[in-house]
Image (tube, rainbow over all chains, first blue to last red; front, side, top):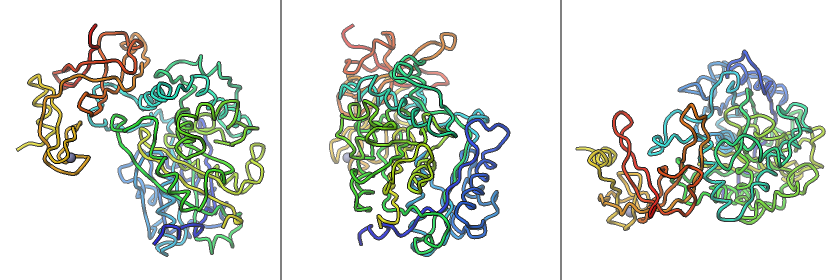
Length: 382
Length: 123
Ligand SMILES: [Zn+2]
């Protein structure tokens, strides 16, 4: 049986963001609960309606259990597979399957972190096998991928800088974004070098914040107050854990997750009106645009040039400002979903893309290790 | 009885850098495993690689001088095929480039354990 039977069967019917940016004095769970309260209110549902919980939080051994206890939910389905920052996009797949199978009726996907105020650095404490001795950091893998892309395809430092510059230009249209000051290509290149060729301006923010998404079956979604964002396709793929085991540092597993998600949705890159790509580092956006088929391999640098993914460009990418300029609380995946839903509803205010029908939310985890692509559409895409 | 991980560390402690080769599919394997990641066979035998490699990608990790200063982290493709994370000792970190020919050497010892680093060839 083809996986097409998940297409359009479920929808995101509520989204919630906690206060985010610099929010001292709150725990991970408190921020998460704030996002959940707002998502439920948005969906017109109550906590008692939630019978599926899909979550992971960093400071717990049994994260989804901790979330259930904290919220006072005894769900029929609980799922907390940890595949890095893409986990929340991955939960879309399992929530959709559980909803469609009737295992649960209302699914909650949530994440929260006080990684800014709590002074916790993102990234696992467990060293990757045979990489511990070299003092590699989270940024190292992404810098190695960037250096390789530049070497192999002639991608320039200035082309790469277009990505944080575009993210900032979008953030300047989002009153809630954390970083809203002007940013030029020169500013990016002249920022403090962290891991060559990446400067601090190529690296995501470290923020406090939480997000929550409520999903239900399409037959129920249409009776709820908000315009549903229907899940049209979703697919996940992993290629490695440690960066040394990645066969080609210029090609991520998005080259597989993307086509599979598009195939489920019956769509192609040309059908996508707005994208949220997990931009932990500037190179992510470039690699995912190539791997998901928005341009050819090696042409990402030219593709993002001239403000092509910025406001006024041809392809709107990371319209909230992304992890680079809006917020990045440890893991960003859930926020790609929230921005996609916000755009499809027409709720994005000054940064609203004109009349989008199809949105793509893409999650990344580990050291480019896991890639999860999802496609959402408005009712007319069903 | 001991597993490949423990064998590998024992070889390093004796001054030998070894990798595995699969008898079933002829692939070379690093890091050490019980099953070949290519074909699934457990017929993995220890071999002594030439030690020759090529820098596949490289970065300068920036660090304050008082904390030890900048350092290199790179990926090296061994002549036999496998890739490993390492560093190139000798030249300043910024002088290490993609395509540089390097040769393996065992470093470390003590609490840190032993590990493989590289040095430029022909300098
Ligand atoms: Zn084999």
